[in-house]
Structure formats: C-alpha cells, structure tokens
Amino acid sequence: MAMLPSFITADFVAREVNYAMEPFEWGKADRATVDAFHGPQWAAKWNQMADEIVTMGFKAIDIWVAHLNPTRVNGAMVSELADILKKHDLKVVAYTGGLGKPNMTVQEGKQVYDVAKGIGTPLIDVGLNLTNAKLAYDLGKEYGIKYAMENHPEKNPQEILAKIGNYGEIIGVAQDTGFWGMFDYDAVKATYELKDHLMHMHLKQMHNTFWGWHSCAFDDGVVNIPGVIDALKKIGYDGAVSVEHEPHAWDPTFEVARSLKLLNKWLAE
Image 1 (spheres, helix red, strand yellow):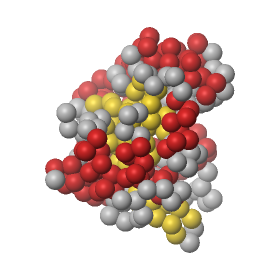
Image 2 (cartoon, helix red, strand yellow):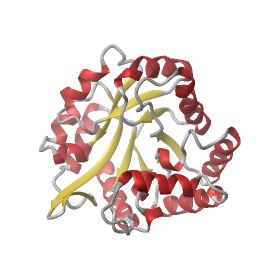
Image 3 (tube, rainbow, N blue to C red):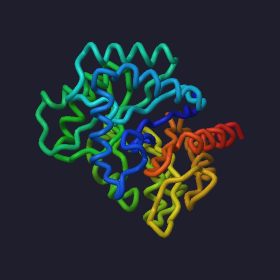
Image 4 (cartoon, rainbow, N blue to C red):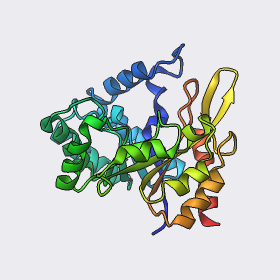
C-alpha cells in the first residue's frame, strides 16, 4: 500500500482569529475555532473547509480536535460530519482528540473514542498523558483504534519510545518532523529509529527566523523532507503522511498546496 498524503486541519489554526492575533496564542485560537465549528453554522463551515481541502488536491484528512471537540458534539453531528466527508470523498486518517488531561475517567475516554469511531478514523494522533496510558490501551483494544503519540516536548526518539512501555501493540508514534528540526536532531535518523513504532506522520518543515521558529513550505527550512520520504519508503511505511504548516499571520493554503505537489513528486520517485 502506498503512503497517503493528508491535510491536517490544524493548518488553519489562525483562520478564525483572521490571522491577526498579536501576540499569537494557540489556546485562544483553539477556542475561537471551537466556537466557530460548533455553532449554528457548523455544517456550512465544514462543507466550505472540505471543499478547500479537496481543491488543494487532498483525498484524506487528519482532523484537529478544535474542529471536532468531543465535549461539544453529539452523535447526530458526528454522523452528519461523516456524511459531509463522504460527500467530498475525504478519508479520515487520524483525529487529534486525545487523552491529554491527567487521570481521565473511562467515561471521559469513551467520549473521545465514540467520536473517533463515528468519523471512522483508525487512530488518534496527539500527545498522551501517561496517567492515561492504560486507558488508551484498553479503549484502543475495545474500539479498534490505535493511539499515536506525537513528539512535541521530546528532544530525541528515545524519549518518546520510553513512554510507550508495554503498550506497543496499541500505542505508537506520530512523528512530527518539525520538532526534530527545532531540536537539531536529524529527522532521517529519527525515522529509522522509530520504524518499529511509527503509526502516523506529521510532515512539517521549519525555519528559524528573527521571530523564532516557524513552519513553512517543504521547499524551505532545515528539515530534510525528501530524505525522510526516502527513509519511509525503505522501512516500508505505508500509512498516512499529513502535510502540516500552521502560520499565524497568513493563510497557508497556497504553501500547503505547493508542499503537496512536492510530496507527490517525492512519493512517485
């Protein structure tokens, strides 16, 4: 099976604050997105976004939790969203609704996994609070949904592999290449080191500017993206590859579409 490029909707993190928040605060942008996508116009908002994603050339989607918050949706909304995505022929490959809050109850966990099941995702791809590792394992076996921990604070693959513990059957890694760039760790080397636990990819390019680290299109930045793709081929990875680029001051659509064209070229080589 070939790798499947996907669009992660967190790329639009700054859209609902009109790319004008100074200084940018992820939490406030998250809340603005939740409010916009769970109000009376939620279906229209989703149809519009799905249209844009398809126009960019994607056939798969990685859903950011702010666009589908498990505490704000009901079963009817989840079912309608599944129909919207089917209408646009978008396959759900991952969902970032996760178990990040400490010591979550089984009921809280099921609330997340019910949404994940309703949209048909095979995995959850976000950070995991280790107090919930057993819960993620148990719910993963019950629902048939794996949990791919994303490397954000970890500065090397060994740090995130140590967190998997004895749950490798269900819990693995969603590799964010951008963070390796920020921590000056070779993303190609990391790909090989994570090969036995790699469940999902957030392919992100980064460059360091006067204002700090920022994501960018694949043809810029410090991460060896073509090298990562080559490594993924060599280890036999056949999962989804999400194109991640989350600028705070402008719409990423053009740059994401450009990155997708490059990705498709590298996948075909």
